[in-house]
Image 1 (tube, rainbow, N blue to C red):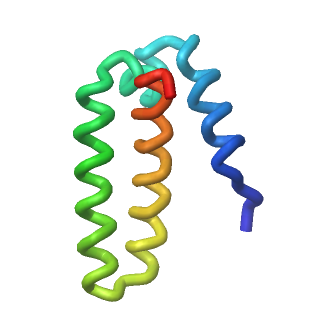
Image 2: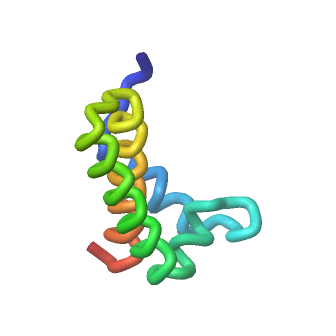
Length: 79
């Protein structure tokens, strides 16, 4: 398993703010905060569904998506 921290992910997202939107999904979300927020909501719903269904594998993947999109939304909002 690869080492992971929210701080490292937040730093990577912040670094992508200076990249080209054509080559960075993160940058494309940072340029469209409404789209990033919508994706956060979609991923949260998917995490809830996985939790209700008791699907540990799907819940793990969806939780990662929620955290990533939350950090993108926070970065876009200057938080």
